[in-house]
Amino acid sequence: MNPEEKELLEKTYELEKENNHMLRGIRNSNRWSLFFRLFYWFIIIGLSVGAFYFIQPYLESLMNTYSSVQDGLGNINSLWSK
Picture (cartoon, rainbow, N blue to C red):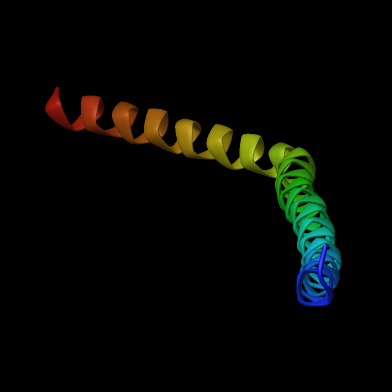
């Protein structure tokens, strides 16, 4: 192996090491990005479910009131039609 080939081989080796380092960094960055993205959606979904859990009694009360008003209006309409 002549000196030019050896120098070219050493440069190629250094470039390969640099590329490998960058690719590992990119892969690490992608992993952390995926982790935080999943964490973000778990928080969003968890807060939504939790909010619904705490608001559900009020919604049920509101629905019961609405249905009783509808029943009352139905009774009033039936009185008017007689």
